[in-house]
Amino acid sequence: MLKKRHTQKGFTLVELMIGVLVGLIIVAAGISLFITSVKGQSDNIKLSRLNQDMRSMMDIMARDIRRAGFVTNTPDSYWASLQNNPFFDNVTSGATTDIAVYNTNTCIVYAYNANNDGPPIVNSAERFGFRLSNTGELEMRSSGGTNENCTDGQWESITEPEVEITGLTFTLTSTTLNATSMATDTDGDGCPDGDDQNPNSASSSCITGLYGNKLCDSGEACNTCTRDGSPDPACLYVRNVTILLAGRLRGDTGVTQSITEQVRVRNDKFLAAIP
Image 1 (cartoon, one colour):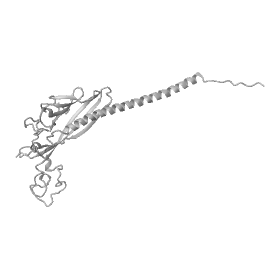
Image 2 (cartoon, rainbow, N blue to C red):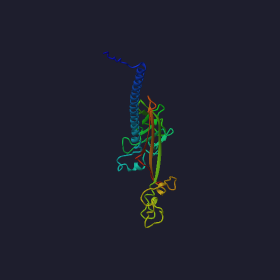
Image 3 (cartoon, one colour):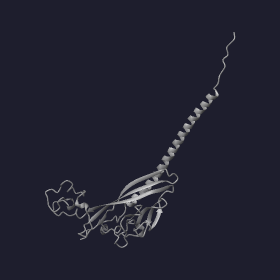
C-alpha cells in the first residue's frame, strides 16, 4: 500500500518581509521610548541643577539685603545711633545713603555695620549691593566709596559658569508709621491719637470698629507720616524688597527658570520728630 507523502511549506518572501517590518517597528518604538525617557531624565537633571543654582543665588541676596541698616547688637551702649543711623543718614560724616535701586531696578545698593564696631562708622567695606552684568551674571559688591550709583566699588560674580541670568529686578516698597501719633493720647481716653477716631474728644470706650485696637489699620492717622515742617512727626519706615530672578543654561537655552522672593528688611528706618 502506497503512503501519501506530505510536503513541508515555509514562509513566503512576502510573509518574511512583513514579519521583518513588524519587528523593525517594534524595535524602533522601543528605541524611541528609551531616547524619550533618557532625554526627559536629562532635562529634569538640568532643570534641577539650574533651580538649585538660582535658589542659592536668591538665598545669598535675601540674607544680605535683610541686614541692610544694621547698626549694633549692643543697643544699650549706642542707643543714640539707633535714632541717627549712620547707615541711613547721608548727613552724618562718613555715612551712606539709604537702601536704593538703580539701572531700571536691576541693581540694589545698601550698607550695614558688618564689623559691628562701636560707635558705628560707615567705611568702604560696609557698602554692599547686587547687580546684573552685561554678560548675564549676578554680581555682588564687596566694597565701595559711595551708594549713589552701581558703578562704584568692587564687584565680583557669584554665578556658576553654566548659568546665564536673563532677568533681575528689585522692587523696593516702603510703608510709613506715624510713631508720634502712637505715643500721644491728647484726650486721655487710653487710645493713642493715631488709633483714635476722635483724638480730641474723650469717650468711655475708644474702640470703634478698627479704631482703638492698638494696631495701625488702613485709614487711621498713624498711616500718615509727613515730613513737611508742620511740625514733622517721628516716622518709622518699614521696607520690603521684592526680588525677581530669571535664568537659563548657557549650553541649553531651552532650560529656563524664574523665581520670586519678598525680603523684609529687618532694620526699620526711624526719623526722629522735628519741632
